[in-house]
Length: 319
Image 1 (cartoon, rainbow, N blue to C red):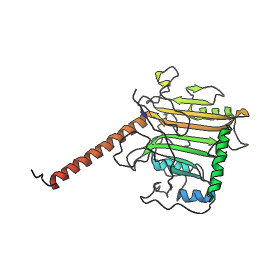
Image 2: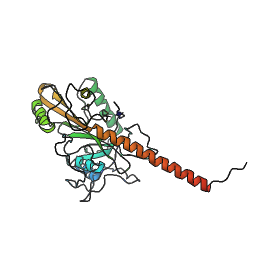
Image 3: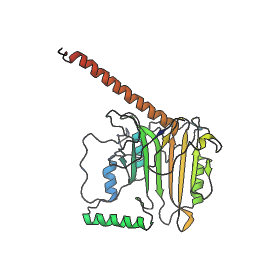
Image 4: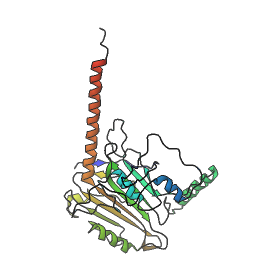
C-alpha cells in the first residue's frame, strides 16, 4: 500500500482578508505589513485581520456529488480552494482569524517555490502591551498548571480553533484535510450522548463507535463505499482526531472522518470538548503527487532553458 506521510505542524502569523462579491484573496503582498501596535479589543484585532471579508463568501468549487460520503466540517471540505476555505472558516464566527502555517508538511522538493500548505484559525485575542515580568509570570503559571496535571489549553470555553491543510502550485492550492476543535461554553455543555447523535446524524453509521467511549470513526474507499470493520482497509483508512497530529494519504482510501469527545472530569456524561478531522485520502494523494510532478516539470523546463541560453551566450573554452 502506497502512502504519503505529512510532517509535524506549527503556527506562524499571516493576516487574511476576505473580499467583495468577487472574493478578494486571503494572501499577503510580498512586502509584509507592519505589525499593528497599541492596545486593542478582540473585536478590533479581528477587524484588522479579517479585512473586507463578506459572509457568506462566494464559492466556485463544485458541490459534493449526490450520494457521496459527507466530507465537510461546517462546509469546509477537501478539494476547496485555499481562499474559499479561509473565508468560510472566518465566517464561522465574527472573531475567527486565519494565520498561515508556513512549515513544509510534505516531503517533496519545491525548488525554491513557496506553496501554501495550510492555515490555522482561532478567536482573536485582546492585544495588551505587557512587561517582561508579566510575560514571565504567565509562563510560570502555565508551567505550574502542567506540573499539577491541570487542564492547559490555548482556547477558552466557548471558543474553537481550526487547522486546514492545503497543497498545490502557488496560487492553486486546495484543501487536503480539515480539523476543528471546540471547547463548549461553561454551563452550556451538551451531553456526550447528544454529541454522538449529532455526529452520527451528519456523517452516518461509523465504523468504530462505542456509546460513551469518546471516539467515533468513519471510513470509505475511493468509490465512496463504506469500509467495514472486517476489511483490511479498516486499520489503514484512519484519521487521528487531534489538531496538528499529522495525516497520511493513500490511494486505497477515500473519505475518512475521526471524532473525539472529551468528557468533563467530574461528570463523564457531559462533553467538555469535541475535535473532528476530515480528509479524502485518495484525492489528497493525487494532489500531492500531481503537485510534485508539476514542480519537477517546471524545474526541468527552467534548467533546459538555462542550458539553451548558456549554449547561445556563453564564451567558448580556450584550449
